[in-house]
Length: 323
Image (cartoon, rainbow, N blue to C red):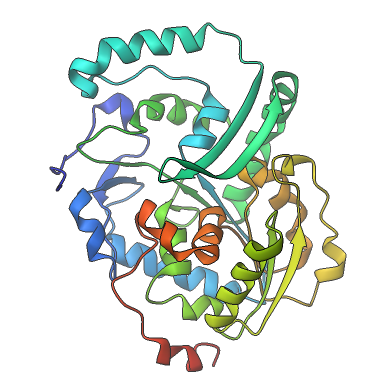
């Protein structure tokens, strides 16, 4: 099925002033969705990705660069339930009633996660309503620091089929309230992280690198992730385990990894800002790459999300990546 392109959304939904086609070299299989994404300036998507890639690679082993992804799971946590858009057509009245019920029903806890083929794949977090109030008090401050020091990879994409654009009006207000101003340097589309670590040029980031992985995987899944990184040419893979669903309260022994790694990739669900805030002493890029871990653990799950399965990859290029 090919989705019909849509030029733009109503002004209330425009988180940023421009909308561009979300297309990247090496991912022609994603063109079927005709995705567009909001941008702070009229920039070509491929050029924007190259700038992001160069920013990350220049910081590898050299300087702290936090990269934090935000999508519908984080939007729900940050903004709460939002009313559906009229783009849902005949389904709008039913979804509006569901929204009203959710809005005025007290939320005792938040349990977020992802699925693959309708089966649970991972847990992003399990927190009580009391904890959620406390967490939200610091969430904006940490993301403001990320915007100042690194990159927010927010999913501001949309296409003919509505998915998460109902969050956009509230998200725009939230960014303004927390004085988070997105530019082409401190913001990139959410899918750039997937393309960076799974796309045709992933060797630029991974080959010859000492990689620290912060994740909750254990046993065979942990072994599979490590093996995938080694196959990609990683020089060494270090691991620090965190909790499966309470990562926001985990304490990372950062000191033992300082000077020992070139790059850190982690998956911590909605606890990601708290993890990022601890990683600055590493002095290397620290990339929130949760779903990429699932792809490394089991390549078949790449089919569940776009920009995780490139058209082709030149493995021979890996040998010169770190030169």
